[in-house]
Image (cartoon, rainbow, N blue to C red; front, side, top):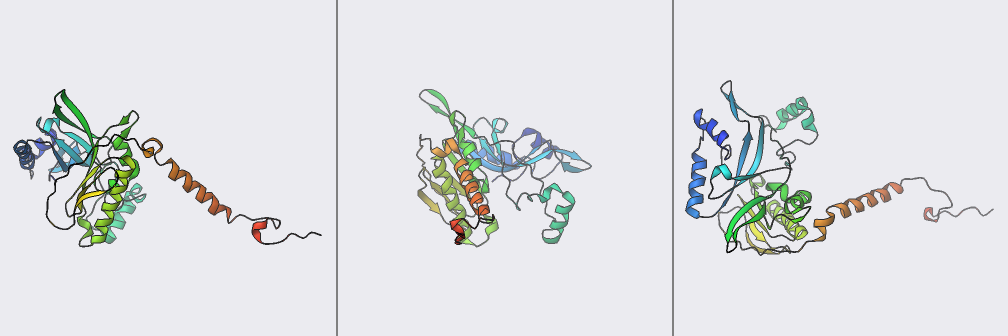
Length: 288
């Protein structure tokens, strides 16, 4: 995780020129780490569009929860994914946010000082990882659902699959489960939800969680390695890529929506008035 305002040159310039903390120090540390490691880095960070100073305060047009892919080309070429499904009651107030005055009063009751000013990303898209092979430069897509997006099937599907087929070979989920405190069952449940995304998309997943549980899952949903939380640790993940195209990649949530509608119709039908001649009422019709 990278504190600050992201990797965009415009944003870091505003921070540095105005003497705002942290300036460029975290970006410089990330670039130095990438060069020393000699491998691309995935970095979670806030990101801003139109960051500026107004009346001696920072202002912006948009603010996102983002993941960057930093490689040897430097921050200016870092690809970025912005979270599209904001977490209810953690990053947005469902429905209530449509009325700012109501949201402000509700926050004043139970979460004074908290704001819900994150913007949702415009569309799910994988990050392009460029690597060298005997045939020259190759590009592999990495799907990076952020935090609770790994519990949203439609988002993960759109990150992994496009109209022309697979667009990402692996899913990397960066998550913050710190708000679960010491409640281990919640962390385990979040990890297990992520396994369904690997199965649905036949795509291996690596989960990197600041307070656990981290681990990696193969494309059949099998847990290959796992670090329980909260504890500090590291692990080496070696996911095997999968070229299968599952049914879910083609039909998405249509079967679930269809069965839900059928269940709703059956439930509604139980409240409809019935004729006395209907055998399901248990009443025999008067033959006379």
